Length: 136
Image: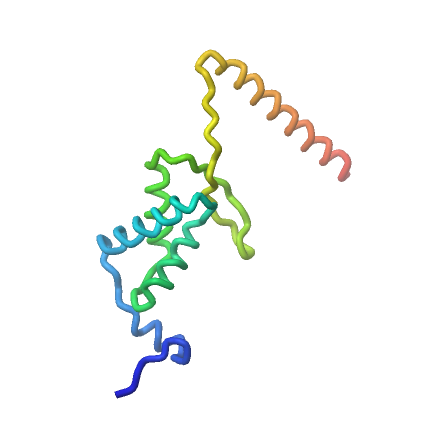
């Protein structure tokens, strides 16, 4: 009886041997992996979760689109200090979840915060216009 060597098997053979994963099982393993990523306190992407799952469960057919949907849904519902940012990863844009510092703003400072935001936005718009003018 021969043993299966994953590293020497042809890719097409490996793909054919992967087992489909049920929706409930996929949710469970994604939730478990997502918890690990959140506990690490580091930035991550849904694709990073997919890669970790594929490494941990090489015989399961882990489809990234399904994992990404679960991650995005869970992150939208969780009250955790993470913010979303689109970043370039390996030549493609990906939603990156970044730990956010928790800044508690007193209720009476909402107006001051809004004014600061408007000033920053106006400054950014002005800088963008200047870059366009200088590039011409």
